[in-house]
Length: 157
Image 1: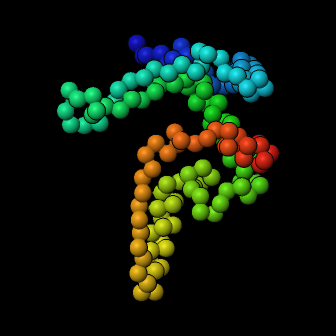
Image 2: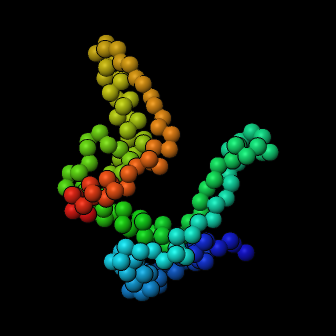
Image 3: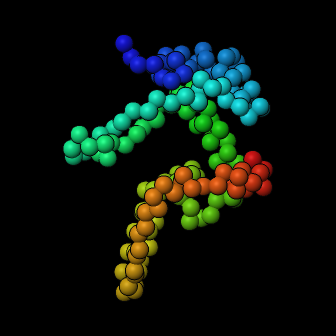
């Protein structure tokens, strides 16, 4: 038997019944009401935390990282909302040209390729390039959500 998601649904059920669940009922009603009220039913906010082994000694806790298994219903809703938010922000030219990761066709890979092309161009011209790579640990954990919400509001989202 397959494990249930925290919301009580199997991912396979959702995948196999996507047409029946999507329009017009019941997911459309759930998501519309959730977006209108700004609330998410508690059952959909539950996560199952499971340890994933990173390597080395399995007896040491530090060699595991926690992974939160969350609701597939919420994941589907997030994809839909992201699609519309990104489309709106792209239409209104809200993304900086140097920003990668959120826009359509822009990812960590596109950033890496753009950077590499720049380095190759410098090399062709005989220009030295110094590069400093940084890794901001838990950078997304430090985002002030109020600032993000204010910026989205200014963009008309």
